[in-house]
Length: 170
Image 1 (cartoon, helix red, strand yellow):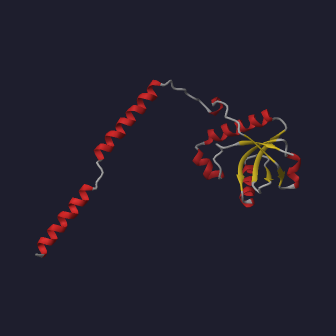
Image 2 (cartoon, helix red, strand yellow; image 1 turned 180 degrees about the horizontal axis):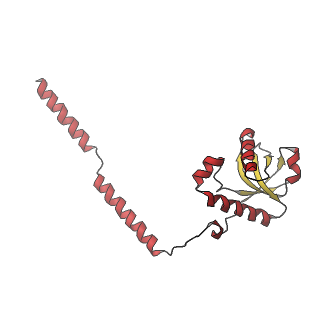
Image 3 (cartoon, one colour; image 1 turned 90 degrees about the vertical axis):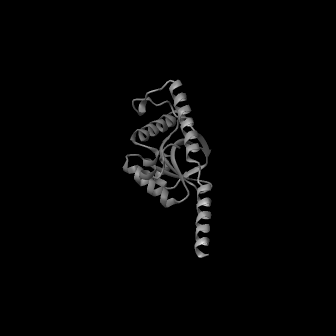
């Protein structure tokens, strides 16, 4: 009797185990069909070859208006109307750490704080919007040429793909 129960339980487990398995071949067929369609679409579109980061198209300029004040009195003189922001952080220590890393890269970094208490890490500040946009594009291209977004996130804590321009309100 024990043997019969053992065989019955074993058969039930096998039936349950095999009935819940995904149909791998069906998934594989769908995957291969999608991959083939993607390859056909890629083949039908003209390919553009970029040789280096300087040939990239201009990056869309995002401008935000805020009232900000320099955190350090020595930075106040360098804070102009249009600033290139690489990060917005809520913790001052994190902002100061990023400032130090960017200063080691040769940037003259300004920390500013808005009315909500967010710290803006600014790497360039100008009176002219076009100059700020050009600097933003230059920074984007420089760090895009250095490597992937993930590398930049690990190295600096920010991906450099969300650079934006801050228009200072008085």
